[in-house]
Length: 200
Image (cartoon, rainbow, N blue to C red; front, side, top):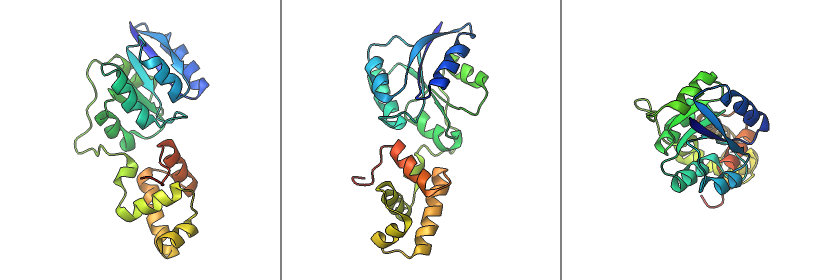
């Protein structure tokens, strides 16, 4: 039996996955955590075979948690289960040590296959193993970090001595590369990844 532990801040996801795990003969439920601190508190001495990790946990970014869990339990299989599209995050997650990446939009049989797989997934040929914000150009990064500091687009222009049209162009590039639709979502992305813009 494969013992499954889930780290996700949505109780409905945890409850749904528990009910589903109990229907799969090869799997058994080992518990859940709703935030990064609870996950790390249990990870050191846990007896799970596989961790299902969401990348949007409160308290710590999922990207940071993946590295910390891998440091605590190098042999633990980690399946990232995220709302973020695989084309944006899968290559990074696999390069960082995850055994598999499954989007929450995919059917559950793909999660089952990932949980039961013995060999890790491998990034597709030519996949970029950097996180989306690591792919920004130098000027896009300046705009991104200013937004992470809480600056408005007009304030960004003032701070960086850019014309409003230039800020708009760079911000459009930032949104496209991060896979978000608004300046608010850019700020939310930064918060999820623990990026304040002040010490980057």
